[in-house]
Amino acid sequence: MNIPQSNLPRVVIVGGGFAGINLVKRLANKNLQVVLIDKRNYHTFQPLLYQVSSSGLEPDSIAYPLRKIIKKHKTTFFRLAEVEQILPDKNEIITSIGHLTYDYLVIATGTKTNYFGNKAIESSSMPMKTVPQALDIRSLILQNFEKAAIADSKEEREAFLNFVIVGAGPTGVELAGAIAELKNNILPRDYHDLNPDDMHIHLLEGADRVLPPMSKHASKKAAKFLNKLGVKVHCNTFVKHYDGLTVTTNSDLTMESETLIWAAGVTGAPVQGLKAEAVIAGANRYKVNQFNQVEDYANIFAVGDIALMTSEEYPKGHPQVAQPAIQQGELLGKNILRLIENKPLKPFVYKDKGSMATIGRNKAVVDLKHYKFGGFFAWFIWMFVHLMSLVGFRNRVIVLFNWTYNYINFDKAARLIIRPFKK
Picture: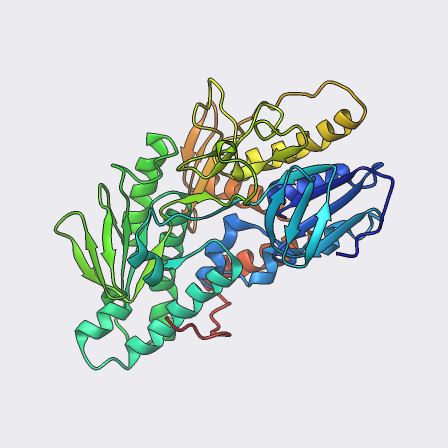
């Protein structure tokens, strides 16, 4: 892999997500050799992927080059590769571009879409976990508008204009609201030959309310906002089958749709090589102790969504969102330095800064420890937090400009079919 030989301890980090890049920043310019490995050469700000899907933002405004993060750090290296296997007995990893030894290994591979074993849905639905997938959804939505304009029958036109989103967590709720704004603001202006009333957005949720991870107050507010935007919410509803056109559920509800977007859950993306007991079945997450060490491996760590650390407060592990990943990455950076210096490690304690979701223009919900609110102020806070969390000054400026333009003009400027999508 052409990594220079060095007498410095080598830390290999697998994954350039929130946990990975915050760990890299903590270890940069220390007395270490750091190697960051990812199958993509950029960090993705996943909370805003839905805005790429709905034509609100271009992908380069939520992606940031990994090499740019480490460019000033002489003993930190990046390799574009996929890690295929870990050989813990040899302190070595096998990647798509070669082998590499390590002194300390950190697994920050995150999650992948969970279809719960339903192969039909996996082959026919649209996931939204990566930038390419978000661009595919954007292209499909716009292609469906074009096809609806030339459809021969009402049934065919309605199938193109029927959008089904499965999963009413933050991702599903935010995407449903964004597509509803396309219907309310873009369709009447760009497609004069289409009737906006023929377009329907269905949001399906297996639980008894939207935003089940958040408070009941947030769920009630979000459901009200969605209803105001024209989104049809179906709770206690599971998708049993989807063949690319017909959506079949556990109830009498069936519908014809050319677009089913799957936002119903994620599962861990572990790397092969560690013993089976290290990975918790079902969740596919590494079992780690309070220092993020993988069980029974002193020099192998897991951070972020791939790590499952149990406690009295979090018996099922921390939520798979950005804040635990950021905080674990930052603390592990300090702990690796302490480990090298033979100092005692500091246990991880999650500081819950609250949760939030936006449902559209002037509509958001925020859950803080002592306060729960929704509406314009919540929407403003959501915008500020996400803007400041973006990696890179340029990205913040571009996103702020786009949001300001969209707000003033009720517009989504990135309505481009750059790469047509074919099912």
